[in-house]
Length: 409
Image (cartoon, rainbow, N blue to C red; front, top):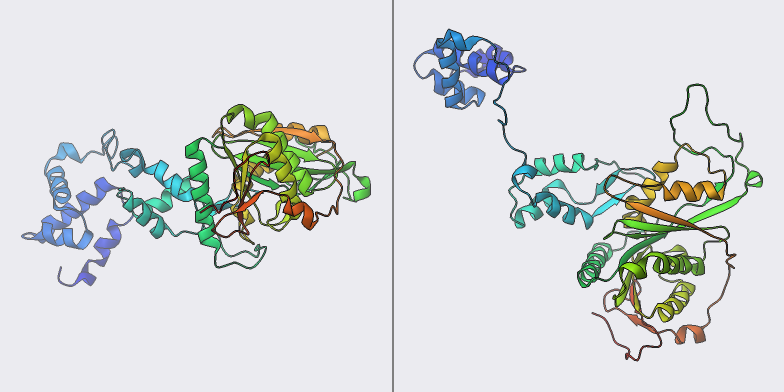
């Protein structure tokens, strides 16, 4: 055994066999070597000495040489880490919630943390897991390795990671207090009519649904602008489908509808509403109209509204993208959005095995674009800037409240 090259045929024969054949083959080689054979075969193959001993006993007992009905006893084999550790999956989910992104048009998810970093965090929480176990659990939960893709919406800012941590901290505090946390965004504008919709759906062979050859805007009935509000704690949401323009007024009206239809019934005693939004668009951090109409909403519902914006170029990290919009897209794939009634029904029928439920309503209002908010109007707003990245984090208090201005840490 001193020269391992002499045992290449033996090692080659060992590969690709089941555990029973392997231990018997190793046992035969150990008997062939004679004195010290068990130790030498164990060092060469990595099999435990007691495994080779068991193989020798089987070779010496002819009755045990018949193929077993199964390789292991019922319940035998190493138990999976998640079965031995009941809190492993919940802690892993908590870690991934801080760093998960996804494609809003599919079910793919990904994270910016490596499996080594995730395993280290789990070990700090008292879990005995390796990066290989983390990789397996992530794949089973729908994560996949992703190559670089040109989808960045802007330059990455150095404050990105710390802003993510701040958003997660604010969300955790709000949930602990029983206050609502919502993720908001506008989905891609859809043309209403007999147009091809990406994807496939089950139909009788040779009976595809016929749609227009061309997607000319002149052939459409109109446009649908789905603005979504997603509650991560309750795993449900509302989509307000507009017909005119995606303005700040429309965005705030969508949140108002969520509050009136859902929020106030589940969070009647809340003191604060936390909104997690993208940094641009109708709910952008620099959009004066967004803040102006949020002030009206705060005055109306009588609670403080806190807004945390995602940094530029990170909209895909917004939970609504991969927790709600992706499933809506999956639900209506391959079906032409022929009417507003169709789109409302398809959104409302969106459900998942994890309990996601979505309501949808049609907003008939015509929202005017180009509204200007003057400096005088802005001066009347009761905006409280947070100490951490005040451009992205701020609270708007009801003006009927007598609280004095302050800086939130």
